[in-house]
Image 1: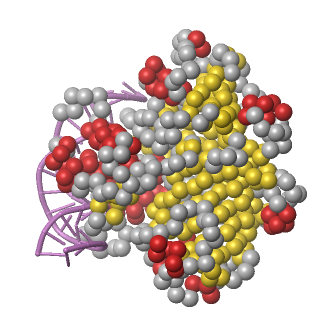
Image 2 (image 1 turned 30 degrees about the vertical axis):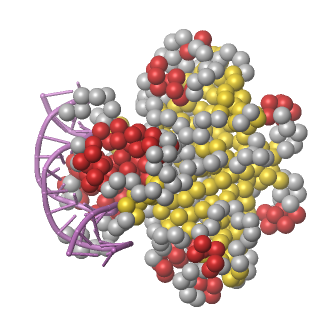
Image 3 (image 1 turned 120 degrees about the horizontal axis):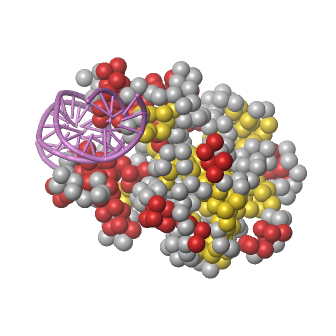
Length: 237
Length: 237
DNA sequence: GAGTGGTCTAGACCACGCA
DNA sequence: GCGTGGTCTAGACCACTCT
């Protein structure tokens, strides 16, 4: 069985998720019962439950014993605090990304925001700076660091219309499986104010993140500055 | 079977979690294999896997196919972005909580940071203001709103040495099962500066959170101001 | 090859919500 | 009483890692 690459539970997850995002199931609707989903997709209950668990932890549904699985309202803000999805990211609909320069190969900054493994540190890193626009306004300025290990001709790829994570997944088979983040409120300096088109000394959210991947010992790091004056950053838990 | 109140997988989760926190298993250690845990606790693999899944999503372990479950390093900062735990919260070891006044029963602020259900809105709310100290310094100032539904003599309870969530769990059987949060960087005003003992116009993290509970239609709301000058706020995902 | 976690089946009984 | 989700068993085969 399972002649396809995708496991059953993941296929079901993607299927239901798409139907929720597309509005086939609307906020407050009841999903088919677990037993119904079993017959519909030809799988057993543990498999269905694995898919539904993922939807719950990604905030798409709520389960109520004796009633069923109820579709949750979709997040409206910028979903950046959680990964929210096995494959694709949420809230990326209105985000446009602009690369500040071609990615460069450098040594790691010292000190660095997270502890680096020996292999990572000696390999150097690919540095990639972006500004991301949300509904036309510059909201994020971020600096991304990738260990320079088996990345081939990474620096010459185009980034304009694709997410960084998508490229890693499609071209290198690297999936994000978790991570860690540190948050601070800071004041914008001259450079940051220019990037985000705000006055100096405005409060800005600073996130330092480590993304762990399916490749053992390989993590990606991001330092993200976010203008939250007009738009809060949103997360679920 | 299961003569105890706690399900098997939860018992195993709590057991392993305690051993990790207590240092029985240290960072980098391998947990016993899933099959070993089956024999040790007298349960089957799906049950063991359910417990391990919870430990993974709470950031205590990482799993590697073909190797085993590896204990993750314990978070060092203030873990507030995720709930991180089926029963108790993490990072609460050095936190001391101080109530600013006796909880009061009031009408909900209008407008409110989240949408309220009809039942919640007409019942009024219990308001509870705290300052929380981390290693002796005031780090959080938070305002909590609880719908005033079946809370009995809640306002007269003592809060000094117990977490708000603990009280709800023990006295009312209310468990936190998820939620939503909005983040912003703001500047401290006069009142906030006094509470957090900082200068005015300093950057401060503002979190607005909704905690969903096991009681249907019953959510708890918090507005939290956090001084991140000396201490980042930490989360996993 | 042996052991690990990843996926899956085919059942079972229980607690809860609703009519 | 019936259908729902919550928990659990006892197996099975596969992919991956290490030796």
